[in-house]
Image (cartoon, rainbow, N blue to C red; front, side, top):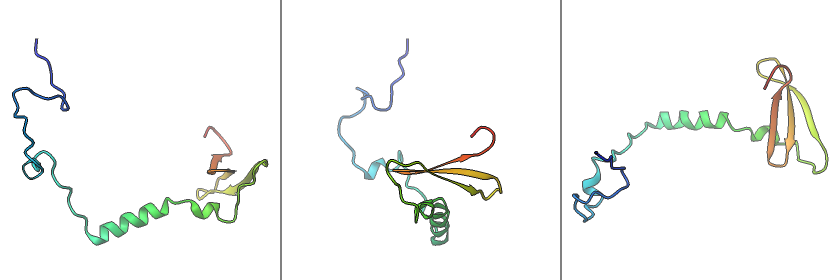
Length: 96
């Protein structure tokens, strides 16, 4: 019966010396460099997902239920609940 060797297991037939990072480059290719325009686009895309602007001016008040109804970008009403660590947004109709 043939046993499959997992990548982290040591193969007794392989040498025990560490060849170093220079000869290991074929196993782990370097990622391609991104152009400055692509890096900028990636930063802008991730910035668009940041919701910290939603929390500005809406402080968490311990012991109270902080809820508000807002219009979503799709035109449907949303329910937002302010929590100590952020905000929870839910659909008003259907299953969330």
